[in-house]
Amino acid sequence: MVSWKTRMKAYWLAKQGKVKKDIENERRIFFTVETGGEEKSVIYEKAKNKWSCDCQFFSLKFTDCSHIKAAKQFLEGEDAGKRLD
Ligand SMILES: [Zn+2]
Image (tube, rainbow, N blue to C red):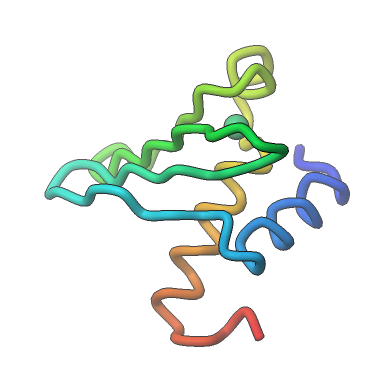
């Protein structure tokens, strides 16, 4: 379960341009998400439809952290043009 706070943070990160798509190939998409002066690496595995992140939250809970949520928002925004606005 993702809390309201996590969703809000993700929305903010995506909206503020803190999400960068680094590399995309047939199997994976690599993102960098900047938060609090740190950069987190988020990876999306297309075939498995699985997301992962190198932050502590994700390594403890194995559930979507704000960085993964932000990357998802970023992808949705990219697909839909300017849907975030
Ligand atoms: Zn994370």
